[in-house]
Image 1 (spheres, rainbow, N blue to C red):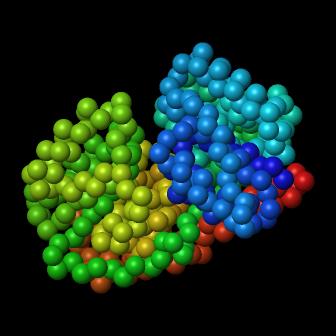
Image 2 (cartoon, rainbow, N blue to C red):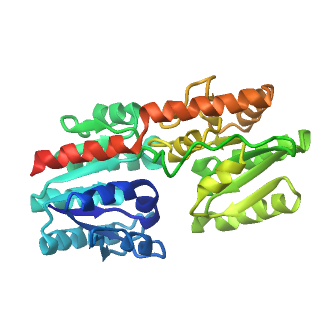
Length: 371
């Protein structure tokens, strides 16, 4: 089959779906990927199996812009792309490829499978924009062969708004590669406890609450060292960069910036905190559990599925600095050995439920139905 994938970010496809791409190549499919060009595209170009490789189609568009004229242009671009390449099936990821790519596939009568990785603030917050987006989703998703959601709450919410009523399904997020994310021995705490957050630096990921909790807790107990991995969103860099730089200078935060191999930092950490306001299903928490680290995360769907409350992690209320502080203090009442045991329990939790091979098999099943 000729498989066309529409997405908005090369690194997301590389980090969470490269095993799926390789599986397609192994089965002899021709794989095309349409996405905006950036420095991460080379990683996808380098993927190959028995001489077959990923074909990249540069498709520039604004990932976060809301200009209706430009977005209409993206719809027309997708329609032209479909007519030119004539794929047997299209897979879509992220909001704009789901909406405009799905609509283009309906127009061109090409089978398509959508993956809604999260609802996003625009829908979660309600109001006029939410209503408009929900109507758009109803139209775009109606003709899909399958619409995958990553947690049951998102599926039920969208079904309640008549989105993907007859063609929806559930995936365990993007899953986690248990080989490239192996069990890591819990490091000694004799020099301190390293608490890590891996998040994009933006308000909805809980960056403000995390930084404030880090300041409060480090002042109370200097042995608690707070780490941060993540890239700035350009529109908020001016807001958060001075704050983060100041905390680094004061010694209460270590900032790694954007890094490709988060495993190395997780392996040196003791506890992973994820303060995000909303998630489809958190890849960060899956990877944290895979390397056997206890987690503290927002009490929301998309996070709470990734750990067993009290056994491999604790949930806290989102948008609440004090809740993060209390969660850290709670886990610090345990012994070092107990925290290590929580991490080991988390590893078993994801082994049983979130192996990335589960996702690959689900996509293979859907492709067989289309052939």
